[in-house]
Length: 190
Image 1 (spheres, one colour):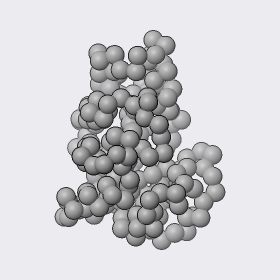
Image 2 (cartoon, helix red, strand yellow):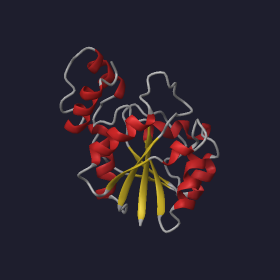
Image 3 (tube, helix red, strand yellow):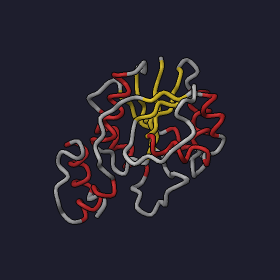
Image 4 (cartoon, helix red, strand yellow):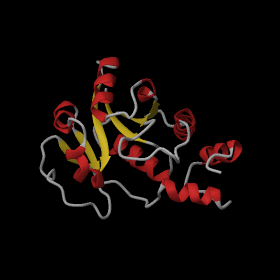
């Protein structure tokens, strides 16, 4: 099976993430997309992150009714911060029967040369890229290991969602109903 790996903090997961994942799973040769919940991104501060198990639970609830989307906690048992290449090696060892592709936004391509062993990522799995507004120029436009995929974009940020929750405002239609219910029930981001 060919599987797309969509890494992120998902703090919280929102409709933009879900649209991209579903588009990748239904408009490409991918058969599934796995949300790889990252305990700590090496490029982000962790002071606003919910605990990884809570974020994993939010992702699981968001995709519960879609069999082509899965949640992965593979990085929870790895050293922090997690580096994509290390996770890719771990996933491939754990699931040798599958073929994997990394999914990322075009805005991250300009940063790719800063990633640990980025050449190995390109060689090892290849990347499916969705467009992002205001993406900086990058050197990867015609790279053979990179496939660009058109996907509808919603300009939603997890920061905006957290701010709305803190202000006591609605996040309806920005996150799935099950995610909103859990955020309210557990008083996340307050």
